[in-house]
Image (cartoon, rainbow, N blue to C red; front, side):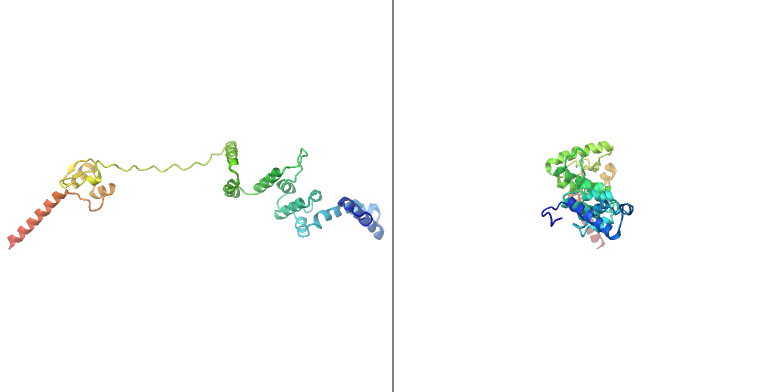
Length: 274
C-alpha cells in the first residue's frame, strides 16, 4: 500500500490493508471458509483488531507490553486494551501503560483519571490544571491514611502563600463536615509563683539582727522563730528562699558575743585548772 500510494500512512488504513492481506493468505493457504474463520475467531475483522492492538500497544513499547499483558485487570480485557490503543497521543499512551505496569492493583479508569485522560461528560478536553489535579488526587487516593498524614506537611510546603487561606477554609469545612475535633494544643503547665520575701534578702542580715524573710520580724536568733511561727526547719528555710548554706541563723553581733563568751569561759576553765 505504501508503494502504490506514497505518503499514505494512516494507521486505520494500514490496519485494514494488513488484515485483508492476512485473511486472504489464511484463506488461500488453508482453504478456510468465512464460517470456519468466524468459528475460530480469525475473521478479517478480528485479525484487524489484533493488528491494531499490536501497532498501538506492542510495537511502540517493546519494554512495556509484557507488563501490560500480565496486568490482572487490563491484560486480558479486550475492551480495556482497545481503549488504551485509541489514545492518539503516543506519550499519553505510554504514560498510561507505565502507570498500569507500576501499580498492578489500579484499574484502567483510575489510571486514566490520574493522568487526566478520561473523556469528560461535557465533551470538553481537560485543561492543563485539571489534568495535573486529576493526577495528584488519583495518587493521593492510592495512599493509606497513615501515609497521607505523614506527607501532609510536605504538601502544605508546596502550596503558594496565596493558596494557604483557601486551604485552611477548606480544611475547616471538611473537619466540620466529618464531625472531627481539631487537635488542641496541650494546656500550659501552671507557673509556680515565686515567693516574695518580706524584706530584701541582701538587706535581711544586719550586725544587730536578722530579718525574717517570711514575716519581716527582726531577731537576734532566727532558728527557733522559724520553727515556732512558720513551721520551717532551717534547711527548709534556706531551700525556700534559695539562700547559701552559710546564711546565718544568728545576728553577727550576737554570734560574736557568744564566741567571745565561749572563749572567755574556756580560758577561765583552763586558768582554774592551773
